[in-house]
Image (tube, rainbow, N blue to C red):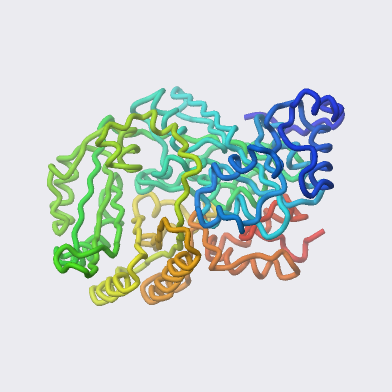
Length: 542
């Protein structure tokens, strides 16, 4: 990795009129408010080499496109949503350094966006004046199969990472998410998991180095940042500590052939029995097998005009179909898995299948993973929980009734066990390992932009979350990458630490205090902040 370095303020000094004359900064000369924009622009020209298409003001014709391309939740793409004063789109690392220095100089909040999949949009919205630094141009993926590592820039997508690995090897992969348009920077810094977590753990369990721009504008790697900060940015959220530039990750071995399958059962097909047995098997079975479970209210085909419940098992096995059919025939007979339910394919094709099995059947190729699918947001709300004891039959039957009554909320259950039980809860900031059978995601999606509909569906998620209280962990926990502002927001006033503690303990458990210690040491002025960032300790503020 590159050694620690800082910008020379004089070396990159260029006259502002020459930069504007050559069109090297694509932005209007008079956006609102002029003082902020002009001051930032002047600072930037003193701290970076000449470049094109670096800064966008609200009056720039491309501003709306740049902003909307990576808005992944349409709830935050309305005329009423507050917009940034400026969007910076770095083309090289020094641009990130300059943006940090200049935003800090003019005392404007800096939001960091690498893919935009944060569920509450905190990388591109704010209640105070703010600047977005959007990393989508920093997307280089460098794979070294001989060393079994990859260096991936924060603005790359998971799909681009997977494609880069596949180009070099058909028997290597990386344990991360199943949605290929997710940005690497946010995904890994928040923990990162996918359908190989039971075999290989989280994404952060396979990170061996990183680069970050700190509050002083320095580029630091693992050696120069120190082990405390390196620990913090592997699950504690990078946006609290700086701007992640890249991660160096260990690749993992995958078989030439893996197996995927999907099995669905409705309530009249004994879906409750399936869920009961899934809870016993999914966290304890062969660690090569990951079985996600979806619970959803659907229209009944038996009684027209009514709703019923459906349970769906979506799975990947790092091996052949015959073996997984044999395993589940003994351990999970209610599933009724047969070989004809299974599809054997390469690991890269399993990524395509998980992303969209219908598109895969129609012939999607690995190159599909390079499609960023920009400006295509749906409306959504997510929440999360952890389950430590199996839910009883009576409990499941009451949950089905509530799901059907509400009509829109669904559940995604992701089993733990395997490698997750082998790693201490304080090895990284992600604390939710041993003791949890599975993680729950509350999921609501819709297409209609009606504010009343949005209110209805987000309320449904809150109602269901409250209803699940008796069935989930006694101390309510949440997953950082399933960002949820309902569990607490920081207003950055004199109670910042106390407000941060509310959501921080849900996301990080006993690791919260260590994160506060790291934050206080590396960013005592709390420059890097968002609505749920790690606060500075109140006794250490400067």
